[in-house]
Image (tube, rainbow over all chains, first blue to last red; front, side, top):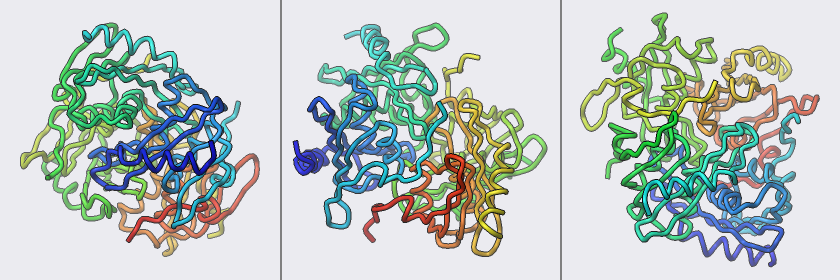
Length: 122
Length: 122
Length: 122
Length: 122
């Protein structure tokens, strides 16, 4: 599956978002290394800081299915990932991140999206 | 499906949690009104405040599948839900919440778990 | 200082809130056991889940000043605290919580606001 | 005040952190354009995702004092800021970010720390 095909999946699922407060519908598609695609959307809450972004939704769904960090290859998002989600992409070890921003489709590595990120001491 | 059967599902899925920081494995099972069960686990992050609780994981997975607030009947959790997750249960309109706390199994309504909660003006 | 005087402080500070997305201005006043009052407001972010509630703002300001859990007596809020903030009130050991909800002023304990809350094993 | 002097303030305040779960003490010092310094520390919660990072603490304290986005010049942190906090730095319009990472002191712009960030439609 190409990054653009993955992005088409993200675009399509976005309509499932529960975003009555921002009305900003975000869709995500995660490609695991075994070829499986897992989708997610943003889910907002009346107490705004309690909401969950689409990236976290898709990844936590995958974790529930049994996937672990290091088993993800690519993710596509119909918008630029917020900083909080970039931290998740770092934790989970994604190779490529494709998203729409200001009318363009961009593909970057996590190291490019979140440079100089911290590493927890082992 | 009984609340105790739902709790058994929550207990079983907890081992899938990604909780390397707290080592506290939480499992959740949501029962939708159509009889479908959706599971979730907690997913932590090295930046602790960015983690996602098991309840939010299960519910956001269900939202991605197409479920909406008002279509959920019951939820079971292998631990007492934090306040943040209680706010989600209120937003989503659950009828019953079953969980383990201090060695007992408890079933309560959301109104009991989160009394005097705010309502957004329509 | 009475709970109603504390609530008046919460009402007054609310105008400092940075809430361009919800336009919902929340103000909080915390009364420490030594008589000092610490204020807070909600601070939102374009990525909604990254926002900080007014209660967390006031309490974290107090922590920076040197206060610790157990050194807080009362808190007043110009709205009902969300579940996430109730969990903070539990962690910090407040005695009384006063807030406006549906046109009334309510004073409750944290145990009433967050019944059956979890306790971390020691 | 130089960036290194600001970092010294961040280093010093870190001991006030309430971090019983991670034992990772983070300190922050914000320099407003009028020369005032506002400090913050991380405040954790037993429900990990409900914690507040030191950057958010310092900035929300400043907002309560009356500062607005665009009125901040520099921030210093005794550790690399997580992605969620980088999103706050973008919202607040900081010019310079100084922090310790892997034994080095780094100063970067927000655009470097969070490239290709989203902009909300006006």
